[in-house]
View 1: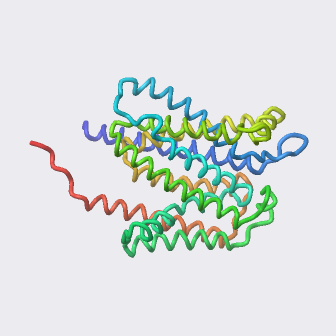
View 2 (view 1 turned 120 degrees about the vertical axis):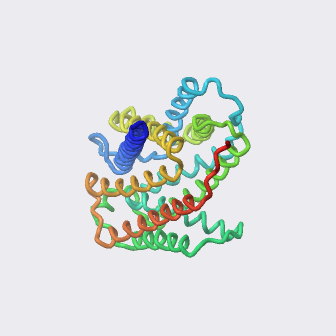
View 3 (view 1 turned 90 degrees about the vertical axis):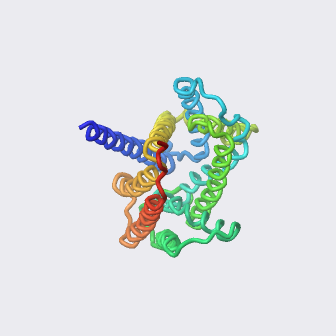
Length: 332
């Protein structure tokens, strides 16, 4: 009876994590698309300074992680020092900025699909630089994802979707997305190196360190000289309060979403988190198509299905690999 109750609580907690991640990041996606395509105020001006979103997100998450550390991790010691994140902070500043700038040139569904193909640069660099050998199944996953993204990019986009973009330019948009993935790969590798060296580093401390350096770098980039774009972004928000509210809610969604991701990883593991975030991306594309009026053609929907078939198969392979691993025997 107790085991049944414990299992039920675990299922309910997982459902809570799924709902939290989906709600936070789907809402953030809607706000991100709104900020990149909408014309604000009677003068019908676009919010051109999308990189400002990264600074705002860094500041909110920095404050959030500081509060969480003081509430939950006050007594912890042995974590990574704050200065150790300086290099990962650089790539974590440049990468997301490129990803969000891509929304000026390609639609939100196209950006989500392109950023879902993270395995392509990872496997390419692994095989080319480190001589890692991958299975036929892993190459099949990569082929499905790469083929789906390519088909989507080559498919004709509706004129309604193109008209919403600030500067339609598909090659530039996809190029920025893949550069984003390359920088993300370095960021993840550096974070893994830091956590390997400092075993007691908590998720909140990583969040604090990354967002601290992100705030420093973005502040320099956005406000480092008199003609920097940050001043124009603040001026735009002063004249268009609706945009300022969208930016605030965008940041809060990101902070809440990170909470649910940390909870999911700590209770159910990274594989469960990958499954939830992958399916969330698919739902984000559907929501964008329905709510934001971005109609996708039959060929584009086929491309979306192809990409997420490859991602789902990749998750299945990881799950099978985990099942084959020998279980540790408990000490008697």
